[in-house]
Amino acid sequence: MDKVSGKLTVYFEEPFWIGVFERIEDGKLSVTKVTFGAEPKDYEVQEYIQKCYFSLKFSPAVETVVKEIKRNPKRMQREAKRQIQETGIGTRSQQALKLQQEQNKQERKVRSREKKEAEGLRMFELKQQKKREKHKGH
Image (cartoon, one colour):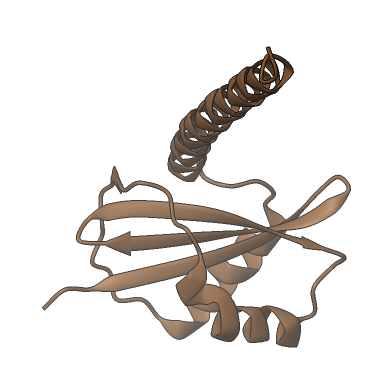
Protein backbone atom coordinates (compact mmCIF):
# COMPACT_ATOMS: atom_id res chain seq x y z
CA MET A 1 0.00 0.00 0.00
CA ASP A 2 1.39 3.40 -1.00
CA LYS A 3 1.77 6.02 1.66
CA VAL A 4 1.54 9.72 0.90
CA SER A 5 2.45 12.34 3.46
CA GLY A 6 2.15 16.09 3.23
CA LYS A 7 3.40 19.09 5.12
CA LEU A 8 2.58 22.79 4.94
CA THR A 9 5.03 25.39 6.22
CA VAL A 10 3.83 29.00 6.44
CA TYR A 11 6.45 31.68 7.05
CA PHE A 12 6.98 35.39 6.59
CA GLU A 13 9.29 36.46 3.78
CA GLU A 14 9.36 40.24 3.50
CA PRO A 15 6.73 41.60 2.51
CA PHE A 16 4.43 38.54 2.10
CA TRP A 17 3.43 35.37 3.91
CA ILE A 18 4.54 32.29 1.97
CA GLY A 19 3.20 28.74 2.20
CA VAL A 20 5.33 25.78 1.09
CA PHE A 21 3.46 22.53 0.44
CA GLU A 22 5.67 19.43 0.61
CA ARG A 23 4.34 16.07 -0.59
CA ILE A 24 6.23 12.79 -0.18
CA GLU A 25 4.92 9.99 -2.39
CA ASP A 26 6.74 6.73 -3.11
CA GLY A 27 9.94 8.08 -1.55
CA LYS A 28 9.96 11.17 -3.76
CA LEU A 29 9.51 14.74 -2.56
CA SER A 30 7.66 17.34 -4.62
CA VAL A 31 7.05 20.92 -3.51
CA THR A 32 5.07 23.99 -4.46
CA LYS A 33 5.11 27.52 -3.14
CA VAL A 34 2.04 29.72 -2.54
CA THR A 35 2.00 33.43 -1.71
CA PHE A 36 -0.73 34.35 0.78
CA GLY A 37 -0.12 38.11 1.00
CA ALA A 38 -1.40 39.21 4.40
CA GLU A 39 -0.97 36.87 7.36
CA PRO A 40 -3.47 34.04 6.83
CA LYS A 41 -5.69 32.89 9.67
CA ASP A 42 -5.92 29.17 10.44
CA TYR A 43 -9.38 28.87 8.92
CA GLU A 44 -8.19 30.69 5.76
CA VAL A 45 -5.33 28.21 5.34
CA GLN A 46 -7.71 25.30 5.92
CA GLU A 47 -10.15 26.71 3.36
CA TYR A 48 -7.32 27.23 0.84
CA ILE A 49 -6.17 23.64 1.26
CA GLN A 50 -9.70 22.31 0.74
CA LYS A 51 -10.39 24.41 -2.34
CA CYS A 52 -7.06 24.71 -4.14
CA TYR A 53 -4.84 21.77 -3.13
CA PHE A 54 -5.64 19.62 -6.16
CA SER A 55 -5.05 22.48 -8.59
CA LEU A 56 -1.54 23.22 -7.26
CA LYS A 57 1.39 22.61 -9.64
CA PHE A 58 4.00 20.63 -7.75
CA SER A 59 7.66 20.57 -8.74
CA PRO A 60 9.27 17.50 -10.32
CA ALA A 61 9.90 14.77 -7.76
CA VAL A 62 13.27 14.62 -5.96
CA GLU A 63 14.54 11.48 -4.22
CA THR A 64 14.31 11.60 -0.42
CA VAL A 65 14.60 9.27 2.55
CA VAL A 66 11.32 8.39 4.27
CA LYS A 67 11.49 7.35 7.91
CA GLU A 68 8.80 5.13 9.46
CA ILE A 69 8.50 6.37 13.04
CA LYS A 70 5.65 6.09 15.56
CA ARG A 71 5.74 8.95 18.02
CA ASN A 72 4.14 9.98 21.25
CA PRO A 73 1.46 12.65 20.61
CA LYS A 74 2.95 14.99 23.22
CA ARG A 75 6.36 14.72 21.55
CA MET A 76 4.76 15.51 18.19
CA GLN A 77 3.12 18.58 19.73
CA ARG A 78 6.46 19.80 21.11
CA GLU A 79 8.14 19.25 17.74
CA ALA A 80 5.38 21.15 15.95
CA LYS A 81 5.86 24.05 18.37
CA ARG A 82 9.62 23.94 17.75
CA GLN A 83 9.12 23.95 13.98
CA ILE A 84 6.86 26.98 14.26
CA GLN A 85 9.72 28.84 15.94
CA GLU A 86 12.13 27.96 13.13
CA THR A 87 12.19 30.06 9.98
CA GLY A 88 12.80 29.03 6.39
CA ILE A 89 12.26 25.78 4.54
CA GLY A 90 14.29 22.61 4.15
CA THR A 91 17.10 22.40 1.63
CA ARG A 92 15.47 19.52 -0.26
CA SER A 93 12.35 21.63 -0.60
CA GLN A 94 14.43 24.53 -1.85
CA GLN A 95 16.05 22.28 -4.45
CA ALA A 96 12.66 21.07 -5.63
CA LEU A 97 11.34 24.65 -5.84
CA LYS A 98 14.43 25.71 -7.79
CA LEU A 99 13.89 22.82 -10.21
CA GLN A 100 10.26 23.87 -10.69
CA GLN A 101 11.33 27.49 -11.24
CA GLU A 102 13.84 26.43 -13.92
CA GLN A 103 11.20 24.31 -15.62
CA ASN A 104 8.74 27.22 -15.68
CA LYS A 105 11.48 29.48 -17.04
CA GLN A 106 12.17 27.10 -19.94
CA GLU A 107 8.46 26.83 -20.75
CA ARG A 108 8.12 30.61 -20.68
CA LYS A 109 11.13 31.01 -23.02
CA VAL A 110 9.66 28.56 -25.52
CA ARG A 111 6.25 30.25 -25.45
CA SER A 112 7.70 33.75 -25.87
CA ARG A 113 9.98 32.59 -28.72
CA GLU A 114 7.02 31.05 -30.57
CA LYS A 115 4.93 34.17 -29.98
CA LYS A 116 7.74 36.40 -31.29
CA GLU A 117 8.18 34.25 -34.41
CA ALA A 118 4.43 34.27 -35.08
CA GLU A 119 4.32 38.06 -34.69
CA GLY A 120 7.30 38.46 -37.05
CA LEU A 121 5.61 36.24 -39.65
CA ARG A 122 2.37 38.20 -39.30
CA MET A 123 4.19 41.52 -39.80
CA PHE A 124 6.02 40.13 -42.85
CA GLU A 125 2.74 38.98 -44.41
CA LEU A 126 1.19 42.39 -43.69
CA LYS A 127 4.10 44.17 -45.42
CA GLN A 128 3.86 41.83 -48.41
CA GLN A 129 0.14 42.47 -48.71
CA LYS A 130 0.63 46.25 -48.58
CA LYS A 131 3.35 46.00 -51.23
CA ARG A 132 1.04 43.98 -53.53
CA GLU A 133 -1.80 46.48 -53.07
CA LYS A 134 0.47 49.40 -54.06
CA HIS A 135 1.31 47.74 -57.37
CA LYS A 136 -2.19 46.50 -58.15
CA GLY A 137 -3.11 49.15 -60.72
CA HIS A 138 0.17 49.11 -62.73
